[in-house]
Image (cartoon, rainbow, N blue to C red; front, side, top):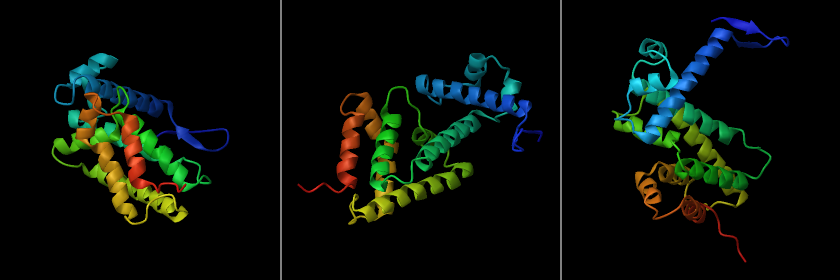
Length: 208
């Protein structure tokens, strides 16, 4: 791997590596667009190569198959979701951070033209099971959510009659839900209503 030195002595990717990363991101961005408009089964590698103006052999330099593209979309989305959670100001109350993260996650899941890591996870499962490359980061993400809920419980902002692990599963399970996705698309509920429902389920109601 060719690494260039910065003026401060830190290492940075070479121009070739940056170009490779930009091309990979372009491939994944195009895949997301086709996942939104055509779905995984109808999407083809030719759709992607034609959209961004590369050859199929060039795509194969980055990804081995359509399923491999899907896995990397899921990995990238999971990384972005985890990064959002980890970059929240740790000096803020955990209860406030949890409320924000729930609202952000639901907005990203059920907002217009969204394909999130939750959707990618469901697609990966439908393609033959969870890929080993996703297992470790998914587990780490769930632990981070559980830890945040535990901190909010210690503050008194989240109910304590249900373990943090189970509340984390309820939260993520709701986001993954195909049923909720259908209900939103068909106009039977909204992201705001789902947020309110989860909030009422997880958080302690303020006493008057």
